[in-house]
Image (tube, rainbow, N blue to C red; front, side, top):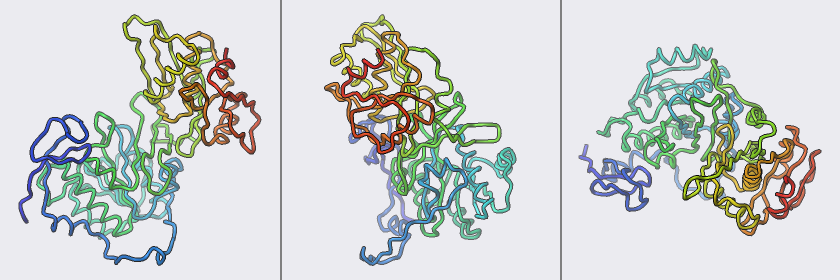
Amino acid sequence: MSKAAAVWRCQDCGSMAPKWLGRCPDCGQFNTFVEDKVRRAEETTARWIFSSDEPRPLSGIDAVGAPRRPTGIAELDRVLGGGIVAGSLILLGGEPGVGKSTLMMQAAGRLARDGLKVLMVSGEESIQQVKLRATRLNIASDNLLILAEIAVDRIQLAVEKTRPDVLIVDSIQTLYHPEISSAPGSVSQVRECAGHLMRLGKGSNIPVFIIGHVTKEGTIAGPRLLEHMVDTVLYFDGGQGNAYRLVRAVKNRFGASNELAVFAMGDAGLVEVDNPSALFLSERPEGAAGSIVAAVIEGTRPLLVEVQALVTPTYLSMPRRLTSGVDHNRAMLTLAVLERRAGARLDQTDVYINIAGGVKANEPALDLPVALAVVSAGSDKPIEPGLCAFGEIGLAGEIRFVANVEDRLKEAAKLGFKKVIMPDQKPPKNPPEIELIVAKTLQAALEQIS
């Protein structure tokens, strides 16, 4: 084995340098350079080959859709695009204790119950500890195999011996490649181990689930290359203070990205939430100023969330602007339009904007609900509880077109809303039994709540 050369690599953008740098010259991030080992090109190229097919003309390839295997958990299937694709590499990231291992254990139990052989590799717990979790979740099956191992070459031997239908690895930061001298969790180890699992899964046509830890910034620990290598990236949101968990697909080669799944954490594990809109609105206060319901789209799912605003006199030379759950820059644009186009006086007030329940939504249709909530909070006049709103606000004060109007209206009607303030655009083909209030400008929309 030839000696590997040492370089320093940025964990965010992958930029390389011959020595450690405090600030990356490419992406500008601080303290992101870690030592890496680089091997000769002829050695690394040989290990990355997992297909021996010759180049084929596009016209001679059969366009056969990839078959999917349902996991038995409808919410998980939603974020996966309908089920598991054979040979896919799926990365699930989240904070410690959020429920990553619990969700994978429940999915493994459902798959094993349906007759599929599942191999679950644990690099953090012993097989006895995994057994305790399975007992708590009431999971017992001869088709579910447990292996406590961190060496990827031994994991490959176990896969070749047992030939499972699904492979689950918990977690990528604990795996160890024997040809890499650095410690588990380093950039080199994470990259090589992920590449080894990718070749193993695609070469054997086995779907592979990888659990990953996240950093304090909320991103998956390890090189950014890891998210580019996998087919699907799922993020687990929700902490100790939330009774429910959100699983969001931020990348999916086989389905819609930004899809959302909602689970409730209970004593027997994660329970699917069939109607998340009702859950998010269940604790909405009655007659409170600064509160309005917004109809948003998460992936392909319409969702109703409560947008809250609080406007208070400021004692600071520069008024405070804090947001939670909405895009901060977009909210600041909305406040600027309110001041300039609608005559709102916010220069002597602190403004706080929040989406209740810890939900994060980032789409232009939130502009109008945010503006209405801020005006309601500033005037201390509640908005009628049966009113819902959505629409993008332009810098000229106009309310612009948004997509999926019919889905938003159906979700609002299903939960009993009577009125919807929406942009002036082509009405849906089958409008529900709900009053549609069309507003061309922000000023016209504000008149509906005054």
